[in-house]
Length: 268
Image (cartoon, rainbow, N blue to C red; front, side, top):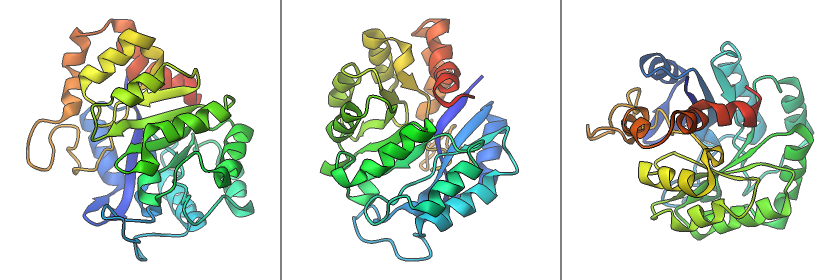
C-alpha cells in the first residue's frame, strides 16, 4: 500500500496539473490514496512576482473548486486546502466549508515561499487555532527563501504542541541538515520525502525512527509520469523510494513511511 500525502492539481505556468493526471499515475504506480493541494493558491510566482488572475484565486473560491474536483473520488483523493497566508486568513465561509467537507479534508497547506510569509508570524495564529479545533495537521513547504526555511516552522510547532506540523521538502535546495536536526527536537514535527534524497530519509529513520517521516511526491509536477521520470527524461527519485529503499530499511519502517504514518496522522 502507498499513500501520497503531498500532491497537486491546478494551473500555474509552466505547471498544469489535473485530476486525470493524478488518477492515471495512481493507477500506474500503485498509489492507493493521494492528498491534494491546489497550486492556484500561490500568491507569488517562482521569481517572487505577484501571480495574476486567473492563475491565483481567492481562498474560498479555490477551496470550493477543489472540493468539487475531489468530491467524486472520496476513496482515492483527499484535500489539504492551500492557504493564502500573505493576504488572507480563514473566514466564516472557509470554516463552514471545512465543517461541511471534513470527510475529504485532511489538513491545511501553507506555502511560505509562494506567500513570502513565515509560518511563525503572529498574525497566523487563527490558522493554528483552526487546525487544533478540527484536528488538522499543518503541512508547510520549506526551503527557497528566508521566510520558508524550516526554523520558522519549528517555531510555530513549538508554540503549538497540540498541532502536528509537516516540513515538506525538509528545506528544498539544501543538504537537509538543518531540517533533519530540527526533526528530532519536537514530537509534533514531521518530515516528508518530497524531493528529499533517499539518503536523508534513511538518516531520519536511523536517528528518530520511521514514525517521523511521511511519503510525498509533488505529483504530477513533471506530468502524468512524474513518478517515473522528470521533465528531461531522467529517472525519477521516487523510483528509488519504490524500489531501492526496500533494501535499506526494515519492512516495518518501509510500511510506516509509505502508508502507516499517514493512516495514523490523517485518520485514513
